Length: 249
Length: 267
Figure 1: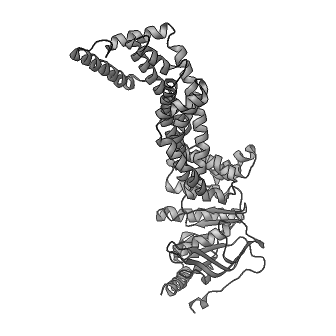
Figure 2 (figure 1 turned 90 degrees about the horizontal axis):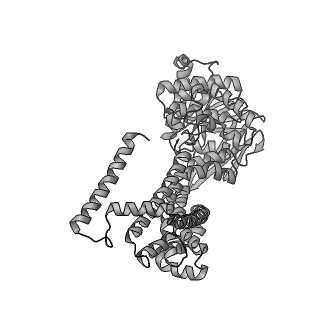
Figure 3 (figure 1 turned 45 degrees about the vertical axis):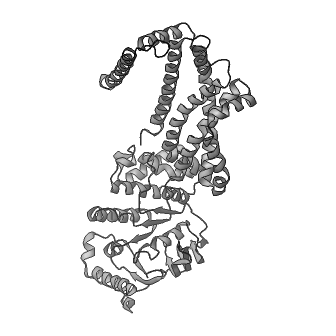
């Protein structure tokens, strides 16, 4: 990257840290309410160096990856069906919208009860939360495929499958990836919520530990920072995939 | 009848494309049905160039869709070489009013699209695309994206794509209507030289009387909706034609006849 593109990002980070520090000083807050940025930064480095954070990150990352894959995969198929079948839309959409409208926070304990406190319950929660944005984006993207291009494909005797692979998917890809950008950040939220409802390990568990038995507020902040970074990193992965697949249009 | 001065020629049983008593209607949004074509008869011989001209909404594009197998008639029959048209066929290529290029594919890959869909082997594909690119004069643009092309170049690419499977019948739905007059004239010239080399049957829909005359062996005039053939005017100009042929007395006479039929239909 060029200096000119890194400079504004670095500047914003410095400004954020300075504002944070100013609030701590002006408000006179104790460390257990709002630790200053340098304390959090030190704890962050320590916790990573000592190997305290990594096992939790690994668990959460696996939950997010599998949950996202399952949720997005189902959403692609379902979104296509919703776009191309009136009947499917009428029958399925009330349930999809209702599932989305029910707060995941309220569902999480129930899902933990059904699927246990292991990986399965988090995958279900992540998949559930990822499903809606990806399904809607797929539906909208497929519906927006230019009818004139579909007619062209028909005039060239394209099979149903050829229409899907050579026309509908490439045409809907920008919309689908837009839905995935939203979905991947929500997947992180889903994993943390799932871990809160009951888990052995994961960043959500670490938050609870830092706030409770350890009472290590700088660690709590360091964990929050890690979660945020995880979200940003996954979002960037989707953006990179998007650039690779649709960048050259 | 005004058409009495022109010779009406109807190809015999060996017609490449034949439409007999064709009627098509579409459901109206407000209920009822809109009759687009009614009792339309037309026979087109192999290697002929036909221009179809008529007022807006008279079903010119519908006529092409019937021949392309994109639409089934409600009444009557459509056949190519004596076989009824059932859905799109490799033997009929169509260039639409808009280029309809896939924006995520390069120009070369757009031209290769029909070959890919038809399952042609990759090796044959590269060679054929090279030929077509050459044919329509897009040699330096094989790797370009459609968004980088001008309107005229996009239509050249669309033409190359329509020719990819070497169809016997080429349908043109006002493909040059969005281009400026000079580009259009040049395209029509190129189209004719291309036709002379490939012996394809061409059916071109157009709004322009001079263009219709310049291209065609016969100018078919359709009535306002529901469209049917009101005149079939032979164009007796020698080939190969040049743009100055349009200034000849014979051309002006034909133009007057065609205009007469169009105005009679509109009245």
